Image 1 (cartoon, one colour):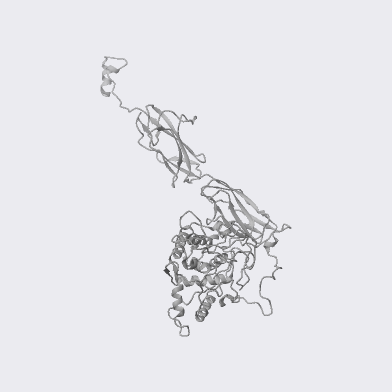
Image 2: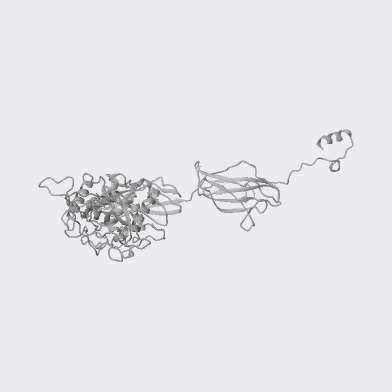
Length: 570
């Protein structure tokens, strides 16, 4: 969470009371039906995140956040309210610094194209940015969106916070002993390592840049195939950012507030929040409301065990992971893998363990991803102790890579799965025209050779190919006479490499020329995958069809019959 701001604001009692009622109404009967994506679910009604080892994928490491709630948005406060205060503050609070606002809207726009099924509203990014850093400390950023001074949360040393030892060698947070949340969207370094994005196109993924951080937050919230227009998905995504019911309530209140209308204000002029979730006695009243289902009288609330004697969780009982029958993982570049990774969690006795979060991480020199474009996915084991990773999507880079599988929050034996991406291939080639390809010596062929590649009957795009003028059907060496192509300098070449089919599977070869040799010549086109097509090229002198004459007759004759026969052909 962001460092303490130097400026504090006091809320009017009436504003606070109404805001508290508003957020209570927002979250009433809306407890998420899905546990937070990463980390153990907090006890109902508790504002503190549940202590745990690093909750994999948790954006902030459950760092502190700002608890200020939005004011009244109505322009007509009730007579019992403090006259003027709610409206004035509401107008101020609705303003979002221009660069920060642009970053949220640009990120949401990009996500509409990259992950249209997510339905990410930019107001959700604004709500999280408000709660995490007060909109980058009121828009204290430069023209490129980079914060003018670091925004760092407290070191996560286990002293009142999660224990997260250094993962970035201090690269982002300047701390080589423990991690700290960084930047306007408060990513911890271990999450930024896989969630980071370049939102402003400068070639750098910087958590201190609001464009980069907003785009990363958008992709983070849209992972796991979540559709944020669905309430349960929205709640799960927010809880995965910071695993606290109070955090969810606060973000939802700002989301609804910003949906009612906002406006742009100059950078550096935004209001600064005052209350933080780790301030002693600084909780907002609404953050102490009991859970919807109250414990029976005389029974203890479902709080965590006494510090020092935590109740064992399923994760605590896991001893190792086993492969659960994963088939060979192979896919052609650009295709989805047709098999998925399955891993089983077991205890020391070899019995399966359910409800354990398993982390799947793609490692190696590859651009393969899981569905949704992420390189890390976290999945809970089912009742049989099995976690199935999201489908893998091959990129364009061919070769082998590894998917490492580990238990979130425990250092136990993991499993590595090998995967291979093969080059795009075609298994058939055909000419797009049946026009004969002919030419006279020293001339040029009127038609260019065009072929179409397919694979299992479907268009084979981006497939590499080579075209060679060969000596014969049985001799594939390059011919040294006959038809030829021209290079950029006009020099004759008889082999073309680095050809590739287009989006429709087509290759159109350059124009062909002929030297003085006549006869039938062969052009052979071969693609990755072994598709082969041999095309005939004929070079012959022009046929003038001259008439026979006595001077050219091999056996002159003066008989009446020869003359007669010669007459009609003249």
